Image (tube, rainbow, N blue to C red; front, side):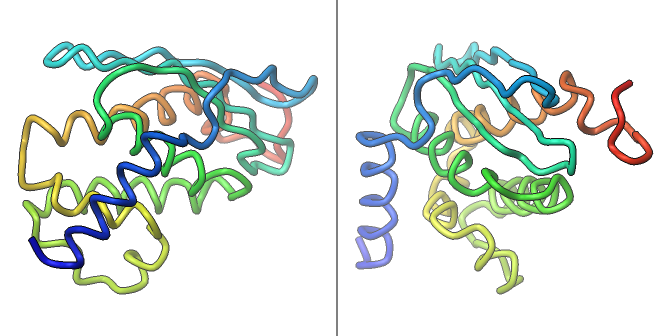
Length: 163
């Protein structure tokens, strides 16, 4: 195992042991908020994720509860850290970059800017070699996307007004 693979493994273990955003938080009154519960039927991993988006279209808070393998829990933790405080357009770019990483079959991304934006999520490059584990890594991302859709934050709302 290379030192890079060891470092990636350590990042995943650290996030699994000390997850960011764990513990559901009530949304701020007046913000767009929603919750999604996702399950990976293949292995039984599950996550309930709550998102809170402010009127300017910035992800204010991501909080979650879940159980499952270290990959699903660590990926949700890393995703929470990445998207909190970011505008929805950046969140969409991060989602696309992480999905591309998961489709790379262990080769990683050639796009240095996308890799820089992904930060600790780059640690999941090795996971992309194992199709059964890709679903684990994408579980939290699926819950985020569903929560954002349910909140109405992704709807075309002029001036950020309510539906």
